[in-house]
Amino acid sequence: MTTLKMSLPTKSLVIPVGLPGSGKSTLLRGIEERYGLAGFRYGADDVRKTMFGDVSTQGNPALVHGAARAMLEVRMAEGLPSTYDATNLTLKARRPLIELCDKYEYTAVLLMARISYDTAQSRNRGREEGRVPGHVLDRMNRQLNDGEWMKACQQGRSGIPYFFDEDTTDIEVDWLA
Ligand SMILES: Nc1ncnc2c1ncn2[C@@H]1O[C@H](COP(=O)(O)OP(=O)(O)O)[C@@H](O)[C@H]1O
Ligand SMILES: [Mg+2]
Image 1: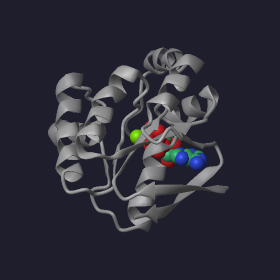
Image 2 (image 1 turned 60 degrees about the vertical axis):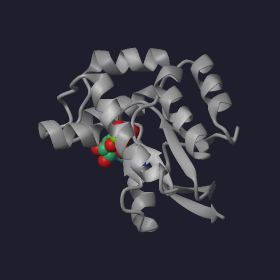
Image 3 (image 1 turned 180 degrees about the vertical axis):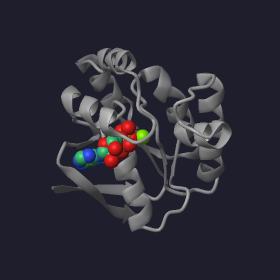
Image 4 (image 1 turned 45 degrees about the vertical axis):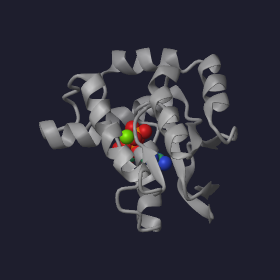
């Protein structure tokens, strides 16, 4: 059990990067609760839950993510710390988030899941809802090669990515002005 410590400007957009089952939502919920930040965490699955009643109905990805990003933007327009809770595995997926950071002068903070594929697989299998089919997890895993990680690291406006591990159970934030 370890606590990850992050230093974040108020106007930060935390962009988690990791396979389903890596523990992103759990950690992000922890930040939301610890600092009483209602609305801090939002993402594609929240749109699915609202519009379909469950997170396993994928829907049209462009529309689902477009709706989730519109919610995010409502928050960023107010200068509030935010996170976009999705897998964010590819440059293409992250680009619109970086654009929002540029628009609202936010720091993009990459939060990378340093989680083995085995662990992601077994957590994905064990979850109550939102279990991703095995072949989809496989395909996503292939997108997560080292090159993709390097690109992700370079994409952050701050240039400093954070990593969490299999034993990271919570995140503590030092909020900068
Ligand atoms: N540190 C952890 N140790 C063990 N199980 C975990 C841990 N973090 C999350 N889980 C479990 O793994 C599953 C996936 O976690 P979740 O946070 O939803 O991952 P993601 O959002 O990356 O898909 C959930 O069932 C969750 O309870
Ligand atoms: Mg999640």
